[in-house]
Amino acid sequence: MKVIIGLGNPGREYAQTRHNVGFITIDELAMRHQIPLDKEKFKALYGSGIMNGEKVILLKPLTYMNLSGEAVRPIIDYFNVDIDDIVVIYDDLDLPVGKVRLRAKGSAGGQNGMKSIIQHIGTQEFKRIRIGIGRPQNGMKVPDYVLGKFVGEDVPAMVQSIKTAADACETWMKHTFIDVMNQYNSKD
Image 1: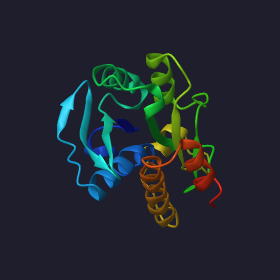
Image 2: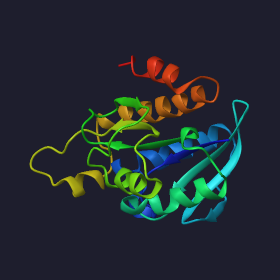
Image 3: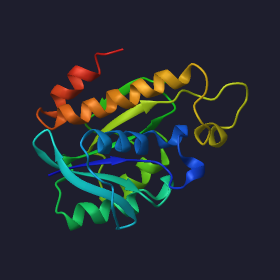
């Protein structure tokens, strides 16, 4: 079984914000594979089903971004999932808008949701898919920027990046993550 975790903030006011690209990707996968996100437990909303022949759990922590690890650790423990079988999808300020990058491990890179997950599971050795949201312009503060919605020319780039991230997750069901990284990190 594999677990795909999308980071974001719960609540209508955060829907479609830059910080919620992980949630949006989980929604895309749920729609594509008709996996209802209908279970609320362990401080998370999740659903389970089959994706490309592999049993999968799609997970959205409901703890708010900075406490994401509080939802991830109990799911891993309850379902006895190997750390090698999880991937976390999240926004990254250091990538241009719409750029998708996969990594097999690494630091939190300043992303508080990732810091929380690393703290709670006790390792940085887990897969991640980073979706670029770019940096704020014109002196806008980072918190205002990440909690803002996509506008203008950023919208089509983000729609495509969500699809690319979802495609990468689907590919991971049948291939090694290294192969998936080689395929999707070469795309621009």
